[in-house]
Length: 241
Image (cartoon, rainbow, N blue to C red; front, side):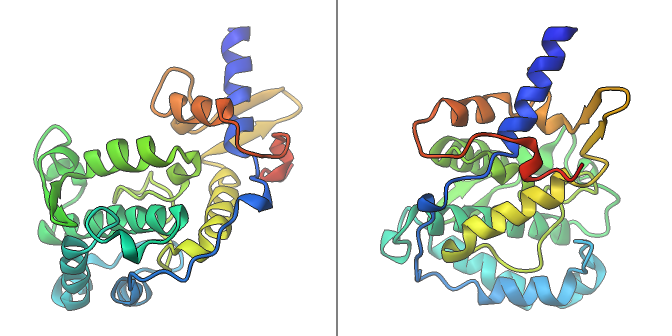
């Protein structure tokens, strides 16, 4: 029990570690996210909730953006993505936009679990991205997680469920990605439903994102083992206590 507690504490420290500012790269970019910005600004409220009913009736911008994703990606148009940050931002936006598209296509529905049984929403619905056919699971696990090894993506990938992180009302872009990930991490970790620290009882409650042996343990451990510059992990960087 004590070992598990120490491991849980380690994971939260890893998750909230702030990256060194010399890691930040700026990138003017060449991929246009303006259509997606229109969707987010019009149909997503300040709490990150999507008005799917209105969006389904006014989905021209979303359809056009998904079509653009289908034609251009870092894989078939690398000239549009001159930095690692712009590539990662593209895949985050693609995942979130396609998740929204999946719900719109099957609206009305109470839950993504009702869209194709046994989590088929993530495994059995395919989208064209940069000329390739991918499902959401592949984009998350094989592209975002494996290629970029950035654990903070788990604070911004939104699976169209109330238990997911808050959907931002602005697209992620390369030149602002570091700031955007930092803000998302701070918000997620300071939501009581995700992280709750009881100093008097010396207890720490964590989202399943940080649970030892569960969903994303390897992401945080891989990041810790990396050689990139970083400041000493301290929980106070993000968690207000």
